Length: 364
Image (cartoon, rainbow, N blue to C red):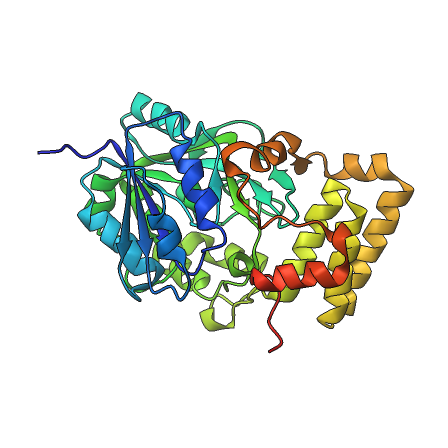
């Protein structure tokens, strides 16, 4: 009888045919080999499953689960895997080669640890990587840090690890009852319950690339207050204040939409210092009717042109560009990621490519 691998990489996948190839390849490129990758396709209407099945590596298993949703896919993996450790992975993101080995080394060195996350960088559709800096030191991951999300500017103790970067112990997850069917967001309620009976840790090394897409930014925080009310009551009021929602009215939580996405993308490209991409983001905001956001980006772009060194220093503590990651993404086995584009090819062409990759709302 074949023994289960030490680590099972769990990759829910829904309508990500444009990105799942590089995501899978980044797992196959890991410098740690004792793993299986479960691609959990759930109700896609594109070629997601076909792309995943095109890989010949025997460590990959593709499950076409039907429309069970993100939560249903995670539940399937938790209850059917025989591995000691499960590693979360989104089908539109990318891992760096040392991710699994670094997390597992830390986890195996301390038996009390059951949850291990890592720092991450944003990967923009223009092929730029911008790392969101932590305090540059690894540290314990507490329930309070998880409860406050990732808004470190207003809450310095908030976590710096990304949800899908987490490696966790399957037996502990099952002991606390697995995923909570009351919520669709999956990870956070589980981490909060696991950290009641075990310990966590977050690694300051950037080992995960979070692809900056509207699908990622448009998910609302509508479940946030309800999750905190159930599992982290003491953090509820502070969370509600930071994210602009009422603790007594979870449904009134403020979501993130396309406008918010393009504001954020423009800011990231401003950190990079690529004027053409920032100007493109400004044009998109104008097209979307967000004159306020476009105005803010214009002023920031003017200041950056006028005082480039001063502007860079202002953000040095919070962000930094990672040209080494950009080079990796545009060479070698990940070079088939053809979703990166250049705004220098013209606004009309760029807009078409972005729309084809679901980065702009379709008008037809």
